[in-house]
Length: 137
Ligand SMILES: [Zn+2]
Image (cartoon, rainbow, N blue to C red):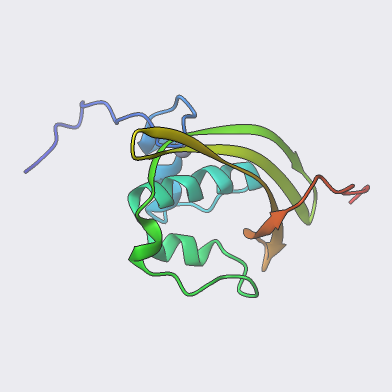
């Protein structure tokens, strides 16, 4: 099966409004690595949607990354809403709501996520209880 080169790429899972091929698709396929924590967070959401375990592992800090398997990816994600993000030089925070359906009910996972620069790449570290003060760095 081939796709005509002129066909439009579907909209990205992360709700950026951009086509997948010009958004998280670039990162999920390994053509590039996100250079901001928010882009990384969006691409990780898209990886959860598409069940891309290698990408989730690659973008998780080695100290906090769990053993992932496909049973962890059964959630039916609906959409992503980035509430607020703050980019630092070595640490960044992204607050988001990720909506999913649980039976007939729509629920949201609300998380304030900590990202750190690890080997010059942004990686997800862990959820935080509240917004910390990042300081001048
Ligand atoms: Zn995207």
